[in-house]
Structures are given as structure tokens and as C-alpha cells.
Length: 202
Image (cartoon, rainbow, N blue to C red):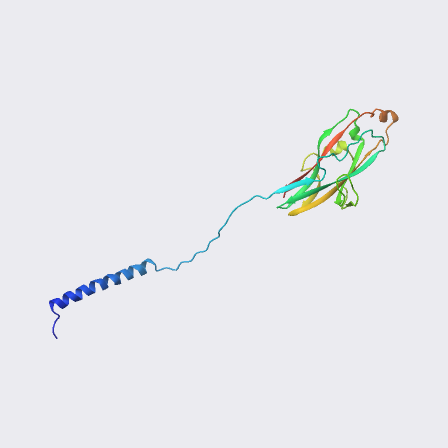
């Protein structure tokens, strides 16, 4: 068999060299990507605070403005409190800004506070109490001691969303057991207190 000539050998070398480069490139490519891969993503992470909002229907007016009060007088008024919360919360009531008198009138104005459904500011028509009273026949001087959220009365568990509760407050000027001289000493006396409802997230 005849051996290839010089020109044939050169031609084979020219052809063989590109093929070798292609083969080498293919082996490098395969070596670089010889792995299985997979990805997953948890996108859109963000953090936002919850919110709580508490309002009532008094339009800035006092529930009681009593003048010329006489022994034995009594009165009942209501107020509706509305909670708007994006997180479960609790509403409690407590006293602020007590006004004391030298005649100790605050010991003789006794108050009962209930909560329930129905009624509206200053008008308890349709009110229905739910549960036992929060305060029963207690003097203003005692209510004044309940002056923080932690010690407050009520404990209304508010779910998320908007909900309302009506509070009914009844006062009476109780002079039971007092002498006429003690009663007369209270003429012209004045006392007062603010009732505040507060909502805190749980």
C-alpha cells in the first residue's frame, strides 16, 4: 500500500487540527456545566404594623352636666364606643381628671356602669346589658382610684375589624345615713371626673 504523499499529509493535518479544537472545546463545555441546578424564590417580603382606633359618639360633649342637684336625684345616660382594629385588642375604661370638693361630694355621688348593646350617646333607648355591671353603686372617689389601663374595668375583647359596644352609666346623689347638718354642708359643692376608654393590642 502506498504511503500518503507530502501534500496529502499536509491536508490531513489541516483538517485534523480544527476537529481537535472542536472536540477539546466540547469537552471543556461539558466539564463546566456538568451539574443539576434548581431555584425557588420567596418574593415580596415586607413588614407593616397593625393599627387600632377607638372613637365614641359624644361629639365632644359631656355625658353629664348636672346643676342644682338635690339629695336623691339620679340620672342614666349612655355612650357608644366603636373599635376599629387590624389586630385583636382589648378595651378598658378608667377615670382621669378627678375634681374633689371640700365637702366630699365625690363620696356621695354613686355610680353604676354597665355595657351592652343598643342605645346611643345620652339616650339609652333600646339598651340591653350584657353580663354583670363593671361598677356597681360605687362613689366617684372610688372610681377615681381606677386610673390606668392596667387597673381599668371592662376588658372588652375586640376582634379584628369594626365593632361597637354601648356603656350605660347611672349616677345618684345618695345621702343615706347623713345628718341634716351634713347634707346642708354640701350646698354649692362641685365634683367631677372624666371617663376614658382605651384600646391596646393584645
